[in-house]
Length: 321
Image (tube, rainbow, N blue to C red):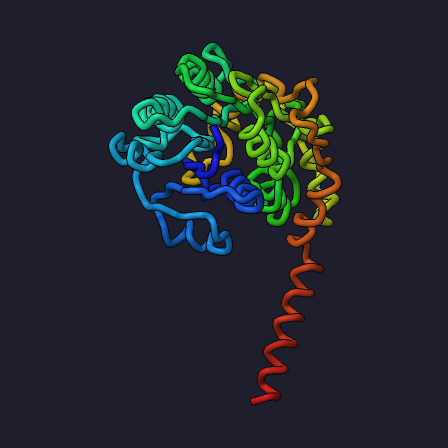
């Protein structure tokens, strides 16, 4: 079946926006479901073939209407911390996957692309990975023409991973780091988006699951040190042992903003790395080729230059007036 219109759940998020941009560039029509249409519209307004629709994706009836008329559905909804209601792992990963499958079946949508995570498994070391594993089983047993994607940590200009470290280094004279030896293989967000879009026209991807990793493996300590160099804020990194890492996660879990939880600690027990080739002939971009350009925008020098630029423009306006 030829695919022209794609319904996207999570299309206004970090990864979803990149998928929408590539779909638009490739000539697809995309329908994006969101709770806040105005906010999402601002992010996607420059994409002429993207329609933003406000609805609750957890409402089965609304979800069935949303996928109507689409030839494919992409689900990239996910949460990193276990919350309440629709923000819980169970609701956002497991129950939503079940609802998406039911909506596709009822509306005759055969093609489904599903975002999972590296190391996802029903018996995984964390609730996050177990919920992702349960969702995978639901999608695999759906009878739909499904493809699953399992990335390592995803980096890019608006990521919440490297940028978080950049903010921490800005305000802290040193870093006390849990799980410093945890290993990651960061993958560029545009490479992830390309894998999703290319699979739409590749029949061989149906029924497949793809691990998505970049070309380099780093420990968490190495990633923090990399961000320090890129931002000009090198800080001493104090790595904690396993016991202290757990108790740091427990303490930070009590904060209003959860930077680290015990579930994150358990997730990091499994190295987020893979040894397979990147699919669809895509040559994955190295962290060093992209990240310094956006991390450098957080340096004191870059902020100074932006302030000078603004002051120059304001001064020009004042002289003209």
